[in-house]
Amino acid sequence: METAKMISSNRESKPKNDLQDLLATLPSEKDWDGAPLYFYKGVWYPVFAIRGALSFQQHFIAQDTDIILASMPKSGTTWLKALTFSVVNRNIYSPKESPLLTTPPHELVRFCEMDLYSKIQLPDIEKLPSPRIFSSHFHYETLPLSIRDSNCKIVYICRNPLDQLVSYFHFARKFERENMEPLSSIDEGFDNVCSGIQCYGPFWDSVLGYWKASIERPDKVLFLKYEDLKEDISSNLKKLGEFLGLPFSEKEEKEGVIEEISKLCSFDNLKDLEVNKTGVFECAGAPNSTFFRKAKVGDWCNYLSPSMAERFGKIVEEKMAR
Ligand code: A3P
Image (cartoon, rainbow, N blue to C red; front, side, top):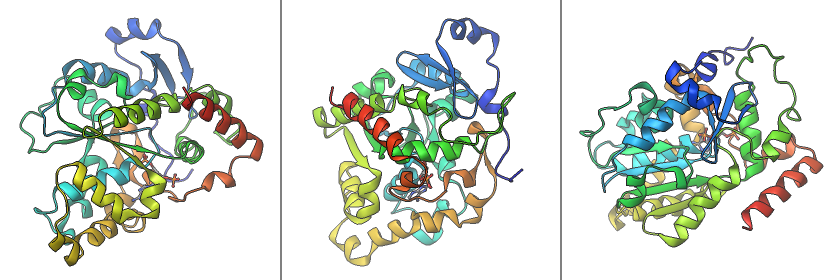
């Protein structure tokens, strides 16, 4: 078994008694790796995120200076965390002394429902230095009210759905499947994905919610695309800085600060750092290395047949036209 195959315990962990009554009432399906997914208020949650999701929804109090990074899994969340952390803290750490060199992006910007609120119902986050940066795979409509009602900023990253699903397939196949054969083919589970059943799916509802919010409230929600970042990271970093109220000055531009941040956060740089090659991101039960695979646009061509791509593409198109 490869070293990347490991800890499936968190992903399949049995919820405690008080949650079991709720879960018993919810539609349930299996994720690609066999771990249970539960459909709660329009979203398919992995079992290990349910408790945290409820606490996050009930207890999170946003501050106007907060920054929330939102995404579907496998859409570039890790990259967005590294970029945002670097933009926000550029006057504190030069790229040569960035904490990103020694700490995985998921520890510097923590997931709310899967990490902070899953460990403790009321995490002590009040006194974190401002601006606090958090991340979540919640859909826009399910975010805690205080996030939507406050002046805090939300940055959403979206990715081509075919690449997102192929990336998730590769992620899921790293996990052992309890009482199931190892996941061998992308055909398995594809019907589910076409019905919107995937971790934090339906994909289209996640994207559409943030897309509409970004049009209605452009000062509040920034909608980024993974592919645009790949094509032109500099102008997207500028956009991010401006949106966060931290625009790059002319002096910074001349001094090459934008290029330095791009390089620091680039796939090639992050994936080769010792800290990202080793260790485990415990709340998802995933080695840090599983967050860095190929980072290619259009990699779906290598895994999906033309008919699968057409089928899924059509579904997404139809759903997005709502
Ligand atoms: P692939 O599986 O297509 O390679 P997430 O961070 O939301 O889990 O997304 C993971 C995807 O983003 C993986 O895609 C991963 O390789 C890619 N990725 C991780 N870090 C990246 C970076 N710094 N730049 C570009 N892509 C990155």
